[in-house]
Structures are given as C-alpha cells and as structure tokens.
Image 1: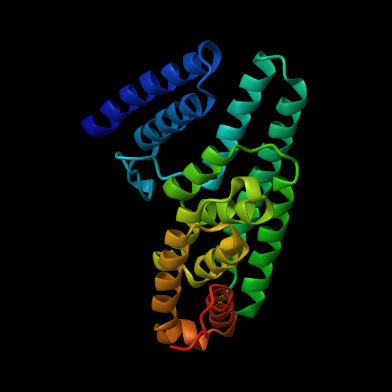
Image 2: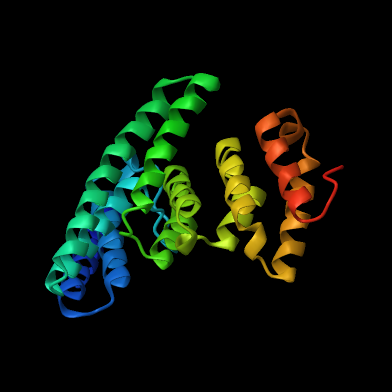
Length: 243
C-alpha cells in the first residue's frame, strides 16, 4: 500500500508537469511522454497488481498511450494556431483508439491460425492508411516502436511501411532479430524489403547478417511467408538466398 500511495503522488506530480509542458513549451513529444509516464504511475496507484507491467526505466507504451499522445500533440498544434494539423492528429488519435480495441479483441478471442492472422493483417492495413494523412513525426513513430507493447510495435511498423519518411532501419532490424512474435517478424522483414534500395553499405551488410540468421531458424523456414520475404531481401542484396 505505501508503494501505491507513493506511486500516486509521483504520478500526479509528473502528470501535472506534462500538462504544463504541453502548454508552456515547444517540446510536444517530451511533454506527451511526461503525460504518459504520469498516467502510468497514477494507474499503478489505483489498480496495483492488476497492472500487468510498469517499466520504470522507460514507459511500456500501449496503443492507447499512443492515441493519448496523439491527442496531446493535437492540442499543441491547436495552441500554435495550426488547426489543420490539430484536426489530422485528432482524427488519427480516434482511429488509433478504435484499432487498439479491435487489436486486443482479436488477440484475446481468436485462436492462433490463418483466420486470426488475416484479421490482424486487416488492422495493419487500416493502420497504414493513417500514414497517408501526414499526421505523424518520424521521431514519435520510432519511439513508439522502441518503447511499445506488441500492438504498439506493430502499429509503428505499419506506419513505417506506408510512409518512406517514417521508416527506421533500426526498427526493421530489431523486428527481425528480436521480434515479439512471428507476426511482428514478418512485418519487420516487409519493412526491410522496402528499404533495401536506400541502405548504406554498412546497413546492407547488417541486414544481410540478420536475415541470414533468421533463415537458419527452423520456424522461419517452415513459415513460407517469412521465408519468402527473407529470401527476397537476400536476392535484393545480391545474395542467392540459400542457407
């Protein structure tokens, strides 16, 4: 109980700082992160053990956190007088909330298999549509992948796939080498494939090593979608794709 009370006090203080930062500074992403951190501490104080995880070294963002951050950035854009950007951000935030609900329902209520994969792919497809509205900053999307829950990471990958300006080579490599799921690894491979033509020699060598390592996995070789994507990447890099 003392820990939860202390978390509540810290959360309120951090959240208040974030609110002030949103209106008093130009650091929108930083202010939004303070809001997310404060909300996480307050939630921990209120729900205690019912919170599955709380990473004190870096907030473990969920898709709902991303939606909240997007609304905070919309408020900041409105404060600057950029009503068009504010409306785009609010529309994206509302859709992210809807996608968060759908993603969780699919993951919790459907068994693993082609039907669930197809349903999740539809969510990813609709997430890509958000990138076409030019509502997101590359630094925000990369941070969502780095600090995110599985659904937040997938959301970031989908946005990167749809918009060249949002792409992050490090996220693509991490999704392949340190994936949270086969679904994430496939989308990391997809993202990497779209980036091959723009990579530096060092990045090409790193990607080749990561993809070759992935193909040595029996699970990847048995998954035709992932295996085919990996071999296409190696072919694009000038390799024969054999392991």
